[in-house]
Length: 147
Image (tube, rainbow, N blue to C red; front, side, top):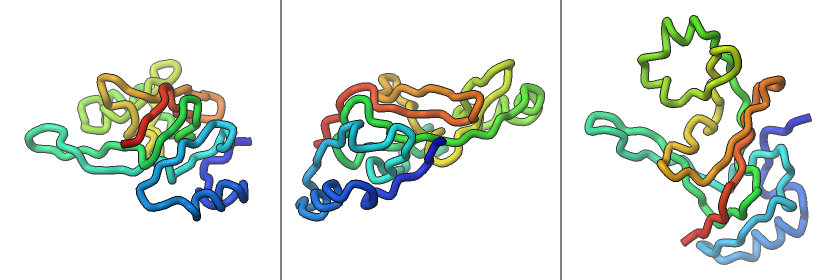
């Protein structure tokens, strides 16, 4: 069973105690063993606005603290968009840039912040699509040093 949300301060008591004792601005790496493999630790990132083109502003996601390689950053539920619906309504829209390619010509729209990850030319997340459960799992690909 997949869980899609993890409260940053619930779960392991040791983590809560460590978080409470940290100074503001101090970063503590989180290892994959500390976060369930199907959890979404929203405390790891923040959404921000960034220039996209001269006329548009887009949204991005950045780490709020160090994230170790292998940590699951997001498990995003998806909406499957049939091929014809994509061709008729979304192909030439701004939403096209936020979709994932699914099976049989279908597209997947990740809910939550799942569609905002990996818009960099050098992304630091891997993603894996679970077509049977319609979720996309985003995992840290490299150690993320927070500065």
